Length: 408
Image (cartoon, rainbow, N blue to C red; front, side, top):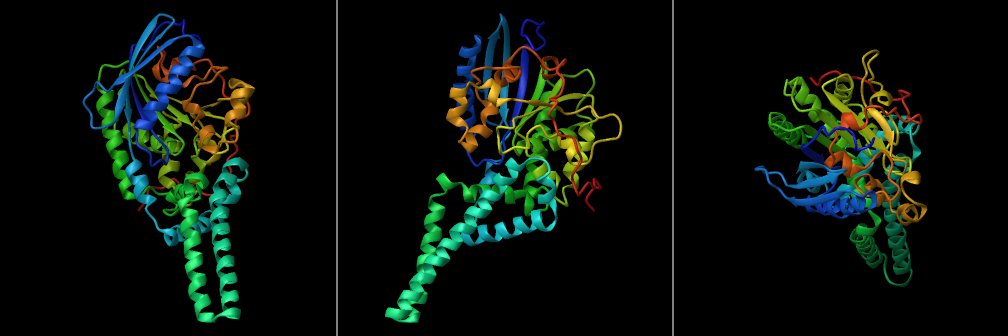
């Protein structure tokens, strides 16, 4: 939508909820600075970042833009849960293999994996990658240990071989883990296992943090701003859905207040909502899809193998209401069209970089521009008011578990 429309936002407050990421918030600010600067040069508008100006314990920064002569100020607040992620990743090698077994059992034993495969194969392959990589590492360590044991038994003594074999196997597994900055097997295993180990429930520490998020957003909703925008990326998308559902249920979103927007990017909601005990998330999806006090736009891309591209999370989870469904508006970032061949070729084999492209610049930008959505003079609702959903969206309900009953 053109920025020549009347300005609806002069001051915005944006909350960003990251996915399962142990990295500190500063990384996201620098990403916004560098990629926003590139997008501003490409698209011909002004964008400048500055230090946080509001009093809050949360990390943040400000964004000032000038687009077609319209100036907008945005306070960005980062809703952090990386400490919870770091704690969940604090498992030794044995603990990670136990998590692997529990995760595989939850997805395969419950049948969730087979239903997820009916949606998109990309995220399923991504989920299977850490399982196969860790199994191969264990197999390699066992083969090496067996070979050492056999040689030692023949030329020395079986007891020496047993000790040497175990020592070699342990050393190899430790070495494999030390290389995980390149292999990402342990990181992804912890990511997929985080929700699976609780069968789709949020652990108590995450529920407590989400309540803090909701309290902070409720405070901002009482301020004199032109839009309150919540952005949830990857796993942060399903956290945002539940946080906003809690806010609306408790009456924190008042008629006549600042317009409320939810932007979900590269969502992996089905990975959680398809689990047997994810009734809380399914209940929130059903509820939020009918609320007219917000706008919800979901942006994904088939080129990103780490998300359920163009899947309507409400519908595919089997919790769409029979009548009155308003959200989400499912749109494609269309990487193959919004990125030139040269730019796309540079990142198409970089798994994580593709998954973060929604937060980055496009050299052939279309309707979706992260920096104009989060820093421009239009509300989320106004920007996409006349946009039809992607014709390639997937809405077929394939979830085996659709219970929305509150936990006892």
